Image 1 (cartoon, rainbow, N blue to C red):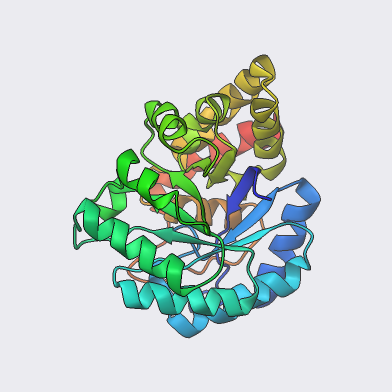
Image 2 (cartoon, rainbow, N blue to C red):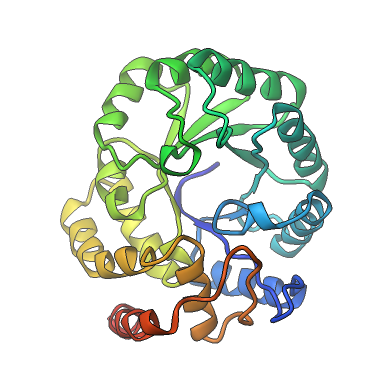
Length: 291
């Protein structure tokens, strides 16, 4: 069900920080028209950390209603507390998402056994397909391949989003898990190589800006068309890099606003992109969006 370019969708907000649901609907229509293969809502890029639990539920329900089954919808439902993650996953399930994406617990630095028990309990409690999200740069803990291999035996744990940027992880995970899990890149810079090595797609920040080009690149890589994937990836690399000149989702949200697709709102403790960095982002947008 899940393959190709899956956009880690920004959450549109008005200047006062309130969620703009009309802009969200319009953004979804644009993505579907542009060929986005799936919507990942309320992940890191969707400002999951700044939304209340009730807003999580409302946004996911709205996304499901707006998509109308045309592409898969994956809802972010991770949390530092296992019980909170269970509640968010139940809420996402009730909203009608096709799967949940669960970032590993941040800040607390659990052991590998703690990570295993965390994901196992969520999966056993909520009967919905679940994707492990391993992003050590944000969580300060790494879900190791051996732990993922243990989790692969749980039927409704169906995939892993690897945001380590370590391409060797693909071979390790394929060797340990076989076809029990699908692998998704969580790092746009290395996504092309990740997919060529056996990944099923990318959960992409850059797809917020150039969904059609990300879809085409991912499709080429999945098909094993390395020359086409290499060419498109080379064009995309400047964008991948500039969208992290400040912490995600600050640059990408400003970029999508600059393109006229959403209002300028963002919630504290996140702040709008620094004015001194905006010309750099604009220059890359002009090059990549026109190419």
